[in-house]
Length: 488
Ligand code: GLN
Image 1 (tube, rainbow, N blue to C red):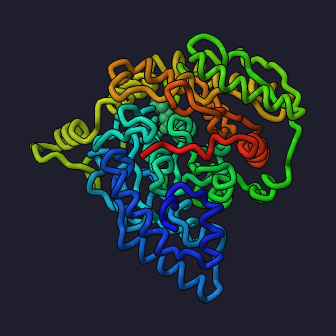
Image 2 (image 1 turned 120 degrees about the vertical axis):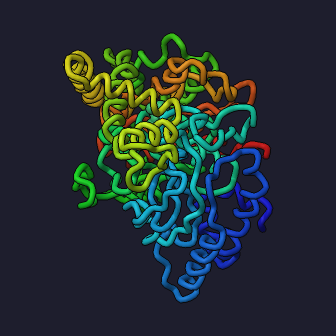
């Protein structure tokens, strides 16, 4: 039974648990073994509390035996990006700043997963404080791509994507501020979703850019992502930006909604800089939807070329403010070379933060400083409104948009980290969804000639997650991409 357990979907694992063919302890142990076998190469995990996971699995088995199953995630192991708090567990954000920090409370997403009976299975590596596109900015290690161990897993949720792709865990959570769920999902050949801003509580998610951050799921199928989203979505009084709106039954929507849909193709997403093989693969997916009777319409997003610049003003401005709390005074890294209070701040922050984080704090402080605020920050906010309007205008004509997730496939480790601008362009197709607050799904749509995964991005209306999942599921069911796995 345990042979190919690690590549089974959540849905398949659920049925093995309910038929009694496998216990949660057996599953959890099999994944611990898998993680031990593959993670020395992939390096997706920052930590894994095997005893804790096995104890939670044991409790799930007892519930099942007593007929008290909590729902579809009961007894299923799930990995968490190391930026989401779990009470009494380390929370590092892959930063030296928080290397020894233990979280005093659960994030709302964590509490909801516990309530759903999930087995919390390890903390996953990321770019430091979620700043990056390759997980090379982690202060601890680079996470490699299970499809080619010389290449990156993407970022910033590289560990969350690679752990699912490598078969160490069936589902995981990441966070997406400018593409950090969708881009690594596309690089690692798995499904990832950024929900609408306000759909999932940010309470207990360490803030990078508060007006853009959103927690979301990774999985091996669209249905699996729907199940995890169901568990974590909803209003939370502890997060004033979470929206009071009913959570639909996502799995039912996926099962019942079969289209045909009106789908838009924004022409600005197919121009210069797009790898020809990625373009061809995404075009094939678009043609497939057309063959199914979907109406395909070209649309225009005239402000799309401003998205990367706008993002790097707004995100860094918010980061410079959010990261001010890490000052060596209370719970973060504290320098040992302190002679006075100024030293405490300067040296603790100089030692605790990595280069990319420092660069962004400096940039963010600059764009907010007097004399520059109007020229940069205020203008960026205005452009942000224009970008949102571009989407809303497109959605008057279509139900969703089809685009590539990333302009290229996974790149070699080290290839882009000397050139921040080249790295920033990784997110050119994902960033505007965060600026507009809309949901986005990335799912595999084929491999390139070197056998590397390509991702199709589906962007939707605010709170249109059910539609996105249904549109993605229709494609997935008709193709074999999600059943292809790396040879690890
Ligand atoms: N890669 C983008 C950045 O570096 C997005 C990161 C994210 O979504 N957290 O900021």
